[in-house]
Length: 80
Image (cartoon, rainbow, N blue to C red):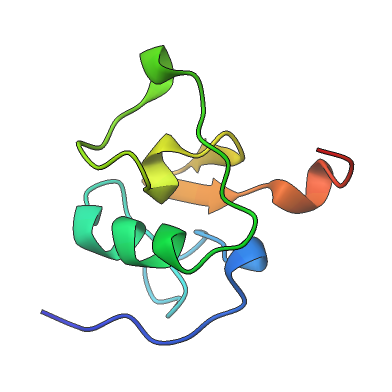
């Protein structure tokens, strides 16, 4: 398993399966690791949670589904 490398968390994106910043729909551990280090993480409403861990990109109010993964859209919500 590949270990997560430091990224600018609020700007990570999932676009291509070759993108080193990708977060595929089933990378639960990586999503948890990113969110633990993300100063922009805000939990979504509990009904929208996907991951078992509360703090996870999959449970963040700023995540959006793109193709076969998710993407952080915090930059679109600068005032939240």
